[in-house]
Image 1: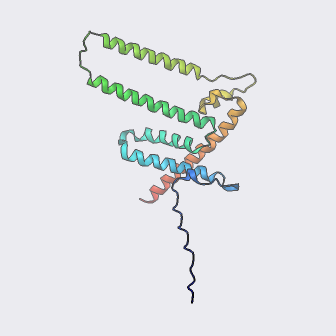
Image 2 (image 1 turned 90 degrees about the vertical axis):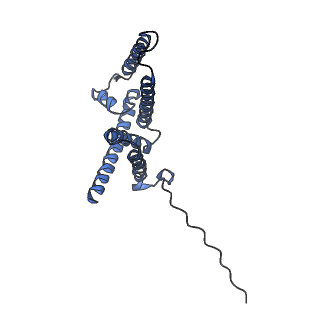
Image 3 (image 1 turned 120 degrees about the horizontal axis):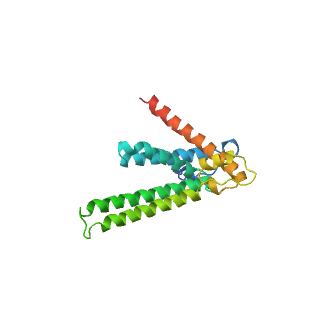
Length: 199
């Protein structure tokens, strides 16, 4: 009597913890992957902050992590998300340069050879930095086009990258930015409620 052989069952796929790789939902749940990605990025950032950031600096770091997580979870074609991520990268680069400068100054001798040449060079460098910041601020000033209402300037100041948008694109980007801000507030309120109920 021949023994009937059954085909081995395929292994069950392991769950993927990264919601970025999940297929987008359709219909009414189309916005839910964005919320999952926001929660994924923000909770991962909170874990990093808890491990490596001292307590006095956590408030500012958590605020930056919230904005960075929101920009990463948003549509990468959005102007405001790209502008926000670019601002975060520029801020990190500035922080690193300041830390390197502080270490080099602390390691330098108290009275450098050549008298006050080092202090003069430092003053020249700080003056150059201030001038560059002033030029950046002048270039980033909101410019209202002809026929635009006065509130366009306020929107350009609020939405990251708004200075480079036309008014019609500005309205669309503002609506998406506000939607992501609302999702971020709901996520943070949910985390507060969760940890408050556990106490």
